[in-house]
Length: 148
Image (cartoon, rainbow, N blue to C red; front, side, top):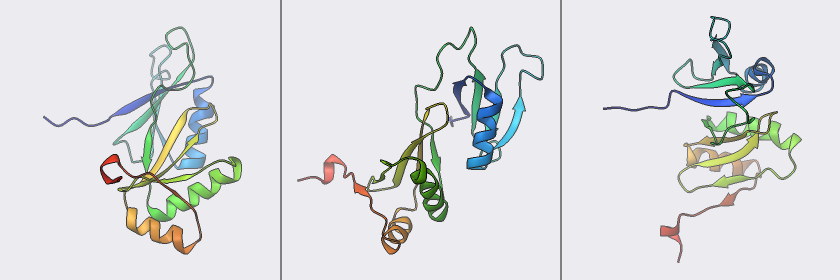
């Protein structure tokens, strides 16, 4: 059996506005609007990888009472895209940090509704080299097995 992530639910005040933000800022595309197809209170599905995985955006209504998500979606980026996106978010968030998790690097930000997002790159050595060349700082988070 093979199991893979298909989509994550995010509840918002305005699914159309949030979908536009993800499309404009992260290059996502709309895969479909289930409500427009007849399902009352249905979501908009958006994806940044051609539909392999998706975010399912629901308007806050009777069946979804809390805005946001109780999980943090993590998005994989190429090293240059990681730096570009970090720079964009850094302009809006003063305390944004890059974390070196030994096998990958990441930073955490929020969408306009305040849902937490993780942006990561598994191309650890390549990204660290670029960050060092461009004088970016990052905080090393070593696994417990590597500590004294």
